[in-house]
Length: 110
Image (cartoon, rainbow, N blue to C red; front, side, top):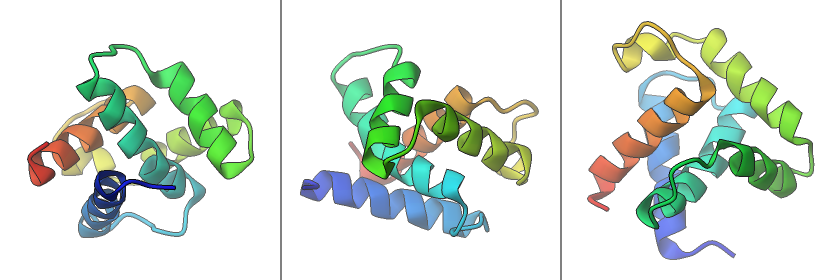
């Protein structure tokens, strides 16, 4: 069950990606939306490296594998112009997730 703040984080992530014109029906988008509340929670609790655990967490939520989660998120940023939306030249999964999480944190004043 999602907490109210997790639901707000998911909604803000959806809104942000929609604002950027990102495809909402892609698997990578769904994985990113699931990932952001997890990353924000870990970030706020002081954990530094969360990507390996993140893939496992999202995979479990979507009943798939960690490697499919990693691949779908990579496909997302390689096949959209998300880098230009954040005004960066090179995107990695970790950088993308952290940029989106930071933007959500800013919008929600967490």
